[in-house]
Image 1 (cartoon, rainbow, N blue to C red):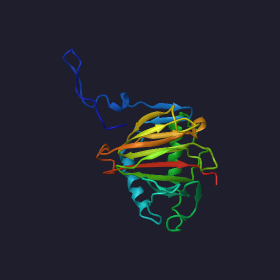
Image 2: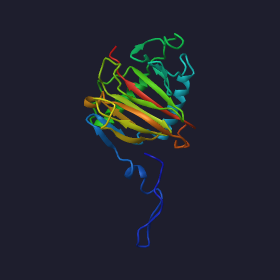
Image 3: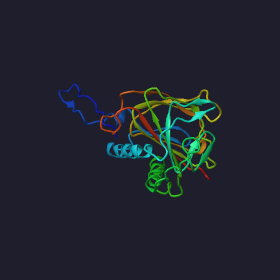
Image 4: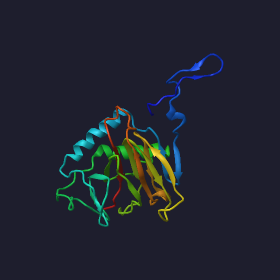
Length: 238
């Protein structure tokens, strides 16, 4: 649920819809299917949950492996990443951050497995849908005002279980495409703080990216003053 509210609206009969009666999130940001197996749920995380996750992010970024911008084909990414469970670098997962400082990454927490399972139940409506889902790695990305993410596929995993994505902080333009190439057709949506996005099944290898972020759009009480955090849980199959 978002904490944006409609303004007072005159009904034309002398009465008014009071501020707070109809949250904008219920009308302007409905749940949406972007493809087979791809579901967007705006405002899934509460502000309390967001603040708690931001505090965990700060702990993860403090070590043993710090935030770092990976290098892809000789170019440094503008997004910074810290990993849990397995360390990701382009085209490979390792237990230690061999391209940073050689330290082992933090373990994947049990509570995040439960969170990932709850996300699948949310998007499917099936209470049993999350029972076999056991993510073992998370790429936790931090976007500053200038950070971008080019169109890409999440295909370094051996497994093809769904990817669960959570957004906290500033909103971003998220582009979700097709499974064939980086070109159209694709769909642009605005992911905001607290949003859930899950893609699996036929959409598991869809190209996707973040062309821009929107500075200053984070809720004041989400725990993150500037930038955007994106937590993506995956099953490596390793």
